Image 1 (spheres, rainbow, N blue to C red):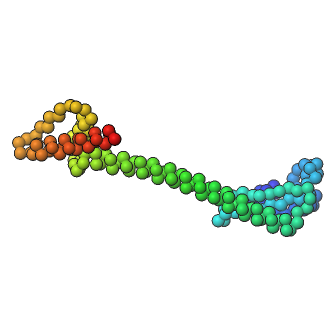
Image 2 (image 1 turned 90 degrees about the horizontal axis):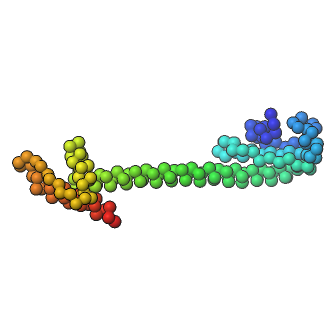
Image 3 (image 1 turned 30 degrees about the vertical axis):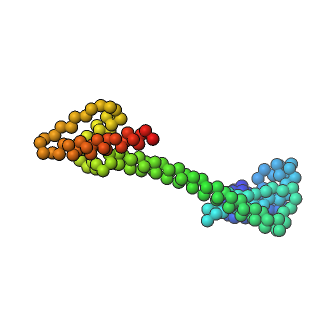
Length: 169
């Protein structure tokens, strides 16, 4: 296992002797004059988010290694905050979409004022009324005797005017 992978899987690692530790790519280590490696895992709520690691051309002291832990803790919080802000933004967009959908549903439900369309027949009539409400067309309401055509005509006329008034705002 490579050094960084070992830190991510097993925890903090400090190596100050490349030849004794069985380092990979020893030719690169020697060519670059690397003398030490220090790595600290970035752990947030039990989840490893990454690794903060350094290769150094001098030995890393215990005090420096503790500072690396401090930097790792700060980096962990910054990454976790970035994830949290991204999630908040995703949820905000989802809420806006749901809000827009619900507003549209409420507008549709109240498009004809106090007329509540529960039956398929009345929904069809209201749908047709919505088509002609924005025009100057004359509408003939038919119905059997005793069905309160005049009362319905007044309600439909009032209700039909509401969407027109709203759309002109």
